[in-house]
Structure formats: C-alpha cells, structure tokens
Image: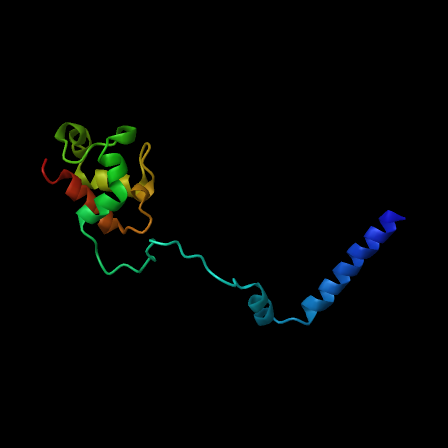
Length: 131
C-alpha cells in the first residue's frame, strides 16, 4: 500500500512538472533560478579588468614569488645565476615556452591564468635581469 502511495506521488509530481515546464518560457525559468543575492567579504577587493600590460615585477609578485622567491619545488630563485644557467643555456625562447606550456612541477602559464604570453615573458625577464 505504501509503495502505491509513493508511486502515485512520484508520477503525479512528474506530470505536474511536465505541465509546468510546457507552459513556462526560458525567460521565466531563468528569472526563477537566478541568484537572489551575493556575498561580500569585508576587505576583499572586487576583481577588475586589466588596465593594460603589467610589469614583469608585478607578475612576479602576484604569480611567481611563491615558488621562484623561495625555490619551492626546485624552481630557480630570482636572479640566482647558478639556478637559471642550465635553463637559459637552452635559450630564452625555450624557457619562455616551458613556462607557457608548463614543465615539471610548474603548471602552464606558471599558474597565472589571467596572464598573457607577453606577461609570462616579462616575468621571466624580471627574474633573470641581473644574471
């Protein structure tokens, strides 16, 4: 008896939903399921569109420092010639392409998903400028 009652409820619900869906436009559905609010975290700044090219130092500070400032995961530290030499011997373009595509523990684009290829190039130039 309980199974019949449950089955009746399920089938009835499905029929009601089908009838509702047929009589509801996409715009009405979108309106019904849109968010009713948003979350603001005090002290957090809203993301904004890039105001243009960033400097290599800016890219380094925001995306590269965690590994290249500390040597984490065997990343060559900024301006340490002995650590960069084996990489730079392959040519700057190879180092740049490795940073774009990812190599060893470094993810593609160095993990900077809002960076352009030129941003990555500027960051590498910044990290190797005194070598």
